[in-house]
Length: 145
Image: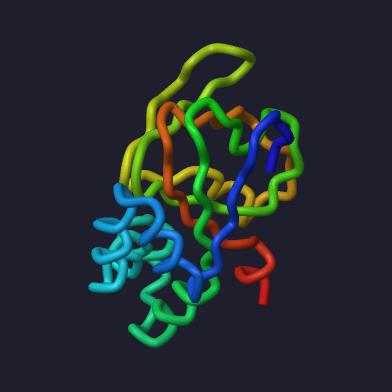
């Protein structure tokens, strides 16, 4: 994760409900995740879907995910950072830029950082929160086992 002025909150699944109770706009996201939305979001990622994971394997992958709240304007990671995690946007939106040029805006259900799972290279883009976001990420270490 890139370093910026501000705070990045990493939330483990067991603490997510407490976080949602204190941050009202995220409570709907938490309820959807409890209803299997995270597994549904994971299935939308082409390489995960193409892996034909069983429901149990998909649940296990979901359990390995870490939730991260990012404030508006915060950098999730910067171009040139070490690439260790794959991210899915659960709430809010992020902007992807390369060499300072905006390339895309990603919203709930979109994902980024997937190349970190298969290629051992530095980040090729900077990702910044356009608004307050709730992301989920999983380390590439869990994909190499």
